[in-house]
Length: 352
Image (cartoon, rainbow, N blue to C red; front, top):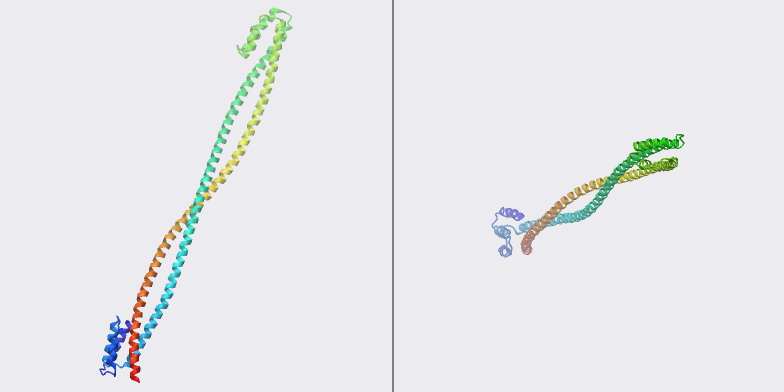
């Protein structure tokens, strides 16, 4: 009632005490107005009872009424603008909240899928690592086996060469002994030398040494049979050495072929290992970025929820304050309007 107080100051400025015609009745009507704003009716009563002109009071009250109505209109416009803005803000925050919630759900789904992909990639990497270890172990085992086979081959061939050399030395001596002109005694002497030679070259327990040593009749026919057997053995040794050479050659070829296959597999597995490692690195970086984005989303969600709550609370408080303010002003306008109608009607009646 600021305007009412101003009006009061104006009223108190009037010092006339002469009352116009009909004013006492008007004063009773003003006092009869039912209102909470008794200060206003009191000022009117004071003004009129002090001799204030009714026409001046009509003008002052009319101006006051118009000002109050303008103030209410301005307040209504300001409220409409502010409440519309707040409503739009709330709608926008709800949309932001909905979008952030959806994005968080999408990001969580992506993170879950990404974790599954990383698990699968890690399993692939572990499998490739195991395959590479198996290949390395297989190659190492293969090389060791090949080295053992080569050493065994070398030992066998050395032994075969030793046997062949002994046979090549013994057989010609037996052939010479068969055709010796001195007869049996010379052949017996030759038998002893041959046995010693065989034992020395081939060992005491070699079958050839044992066969020659146990021969009781060392005559020409017996020696020829021994020569035939030794010749047969020599041919067998030569064939065996040739077979050993062929097998060794084939073993080397097989060894190199398997090594090549292992090398090709290792190269393929190594490439797959490198590709998988790069994929894991990339996916891990994607996961880091995704988790960072989720952190930001969760932060924004919390802030948006708080801002939405605060904006709604502010709007509720603003609406409540406006309702109280409007109710009070409407009541004031009603009181002033009633007073205005009374003084205006009084002025019209007494003007006639």
